Length: 335
Figure 1 (cartoon, helix red, strand yellow):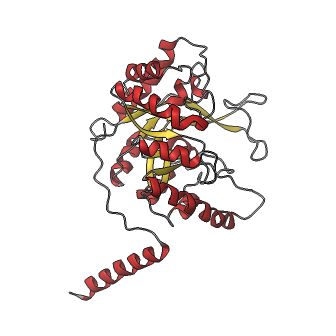
Figure 2 (figure 1 turned 180 degrees about the vertical axis):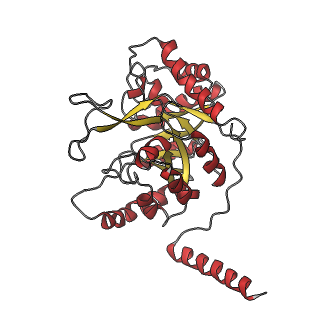
Figure 3 (figure 1 turned 90 degrees about the vertical axis):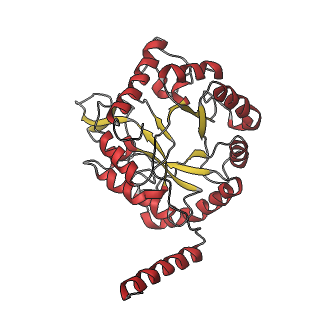
């Protein structure tokens, strides 16, 4: 073996020993990315309460599966009743030929109410992914010590996930108050742990708002194997006229500022869908994926249990989002 190969082998061994000392399991390389199933998000369908009606709406829009909200009403499944209410809901969705690989639930750490019951129920149903979050900064204190303080909490959640064989996917938002908006900050926490059990639910819309000019793509590449799931939405920043109200209400995480996020249908904002496809292939991403529709859409965008627009118009808008995504990714092998 020549000197270069000896050095490479020694470096690999040193890395393995370092990971072992940290308690991080060696994870085999992910399988190459192939065709992705695109889920709907049941938060936008909470105006439908019967799971059969929810399934029909998902089919009408053309999605492959459903991320189910396990949240207090109007969530589709009450977290306090998850053991009794989630299994029949999932059965109906799957009986309609749709997949269920993800739930969205109010778990912040292992001590969150109903956390273990939710995780165990999901695992028993073969659901291997759940949304997780969200940590917030005390902006009057230094950042790095706050990140260090999160690691023991994440460690306990990782142990719970490993026990049941599920992954917690941390959903990133934009704005200075939330941990993970910059991606690198939460990655600093996650890289201590096995990506089989913890990762990001990467929201490319929020990531674009937080890392404009395609900086988000660098962050996504850095996260690599910690990208556990993908959420797709679109938006842009707009300058409001004096007295004009922002789309989602005023911000409270800083001094007055005239620039605000406006959410729009997919393809009408600044999210770079072709570049997203390129990065997904580079990191061998294999799902899950969902589309979020947070632009004005009769109340569906904000989890309402009643609509102010006709059903056909609401579902038609979300169906168009899926069509735009598939057109943007045509020829990539991802859809």
